[in-house]
Image (spheres, rainbow, N blue to C red):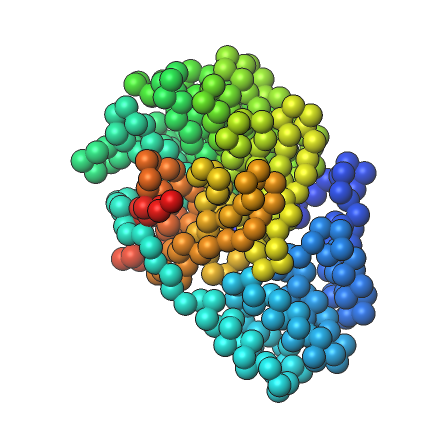
Length: 427
């Protein structure tokens, strides 16, 4: 989902601190933001350093520390933090950032600026698989039916699911708004039970959106053969509403679905009529696409604001994956386990990227990350993907970049149609 929409969820439904298991670092974050607004950069620095001690390096922390040190007149220290940020492979327009004006004549700045610019250099390892004809779909997720060799793509704006057959023909799998649905988001095929699972969320980017539906969301199961609705699971009422945005499917048929508004992950076993929360609300900030460990005992959940959480499914304990300081794991929308690695689609930071995240043998620690794609013109708000054999298919151009904050869309240009790319992953 588009970064601006996710951040709007974060700041509009922020739960009380008492409900948060790790509220201290969030308090530091809020204090740092307020201090920046007040021009108190000594407090900005102190709060960001405290936050970093608690949760480790994050791009916005380290860039913020560069800003604080520059504003305090500590040019050398500001450049050290800016270089740490650049080592993550990300970009910010430091050359036009008024907060960093005082360091641009410092020795070493030009080298770091060159490194930031190099982080935008294109890396291309895939190719276009197909382009969808409706530029206004706002394509969110993609799934694949191995039996009938067809792709499913969810549409946020058109409020439907489309199907792309093996010949490339596109048709509707569900009708817009049918069965009381809103924007269509996550998709997952259950081949054994011949079901297509989907989530729907009342978002203002959807056609005929009604503000009265804001905060409503549901998990749906469709018959793969007929498209008939077989099940609908609504989450329990919550003060901040719900946004069932992303999901993964256990081979045994259990569905795991993240709720970006409530800050939790739900589980639905085969035949379930209710959603079971794995962790208390607000345990996570903006949970995205879950990924199961190979043994099915752990659930890796990327949190858009913080990194990757790991939920032990037996004890429900939550831990955060440790990672090197030069690996940025925030802003991940789609996450997929491929053997002992993870493929991550990042649409939060600049540049948007597709990463292969490398782990130790037990997958308890991140060792590094390789950039598979970035800087490709068609890589515009990429969202989600699906593995088919050795190939990873992913929505590279989703259409989210054309969605304004009020939900309206800018006019489509000649090159704005949603694009799915294919990338062969070499082991």
